[in-house]
Image 1 (cartoon, rainbow, N blue to C red):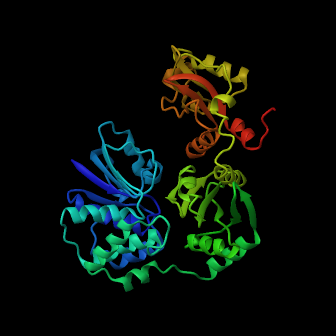
Image 2: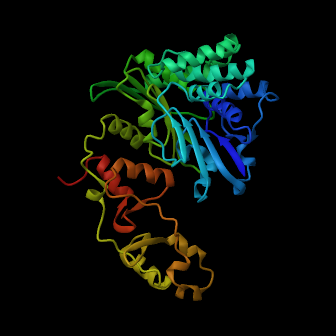
Image 3: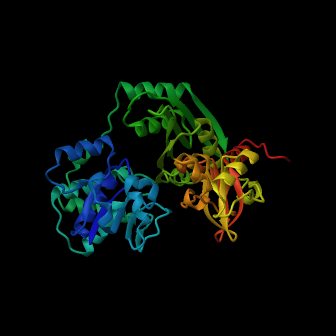
Length: 435
């Protein structure tokens, strides 16, 4: 049985420390490191590459995995290529995480509100009476200190402090921790901070003072989280958000959202999880691709407001009845319906149940004219991304962004009730619904 331990993309010290700690708890498992890790973690790994045993995540043969151990996240979307493992029916998943929420349906979880995931791992190492080396203790303390702000963040608990004491008792090197946790601040970061201050907006949302700055960046700029923290301190608000927009190779825009909060009532981590990111109450981030940054900014405002229009549900916005075709319909007839209705896709419904989606791009699979007489079930996509009627417009927008699709079938117990499009959601965001 192949067992893998992994963590989230852009792994920080808590993620990497938890990954290493998990190898002590599950010695038969292989630690798979994500392709992207934070620069300070990369520097630590480079110096200690002969000390810790792990492999690159993309080298893993996913076909033989029977158990997946996930640390410092409970979201499939944050696992990169390994997220495809969720399609394995009998996969056993174990989760260790200090963040709330997540969509991984694990067989077993240790998910508690402490300051750092490595605190939970230390608890287990103590229970197992595991011996750890000074360098392991140093790494674990770095993860703990990073996620608790040296035990100063409001999310820090007594157990975090006890764990830090236990690690210091095992010869964790505070000087080394300080060296690797010291973020770099150079000319690039200074320029970004200056641009943020020039492009800032200060808002009062649900009683909180909030500042959002949206800027364009070219190339890689490290330690943007430090820049946002400094920005929040300078503008003196409860919470600050940096929207860093850059151009992808395909010409589309991607937006890195980084938030920092100094108010216990404004949980940045929860906001970022609503945008397929993650974090904890004081800090969080999300990466959104192929999105309009103006809409992202409005989403942040809506989320802080607590979605005061939450009485509006998908069922209020969707179109119905739905034009659909049965699975035996010929491709020629489907093409005719698409032309007549002026739409780009249709649900395929069998006895009221949604079984697939056929879109114009599926016609590219046709190589011979005779194939136009083939049934639509031969060309449709049976992997349908759908949404339930009780969900909110924000959840619909998030799903569309994640999967880069323009419409969602609204499904209840397998039966299609309606369709909601990107335009429907945007109308909601911009208050264009008829009064």
